[in-house]
Length: 113
Image (tube, rainbow, N blue to C red; front, side, top):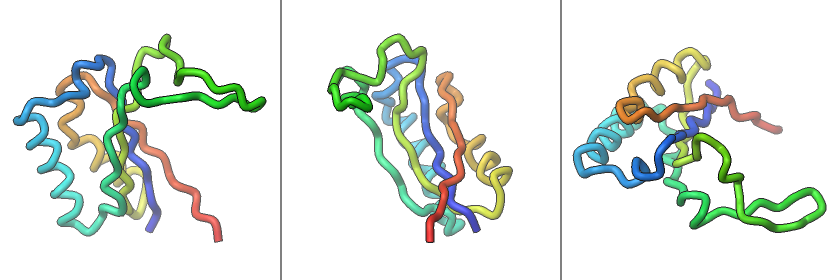
């Protein structure tokens, strides 16, 4: 089994505050993953970048970031465990985030021994 991080992205900051119905849909999706014993880390919701982010460059200069010119922002993540990335993608495709124009990046997590 492999671990995959599902990284949630939104286009509009207004979508970072879901309605109660949207929140229930998201919780149901998460519960379905947990019921399959594939949820490793329920992750967290990230604050919008202007409120809760800083960028530290290689020369350790701290600035607000990530950069505001990005067309999308990270809204959160979870970690799931599946046999293949294709299986992780199929799970991600069931997320209601797509109904509001969001996207999900699926990335395998490198395990170090």
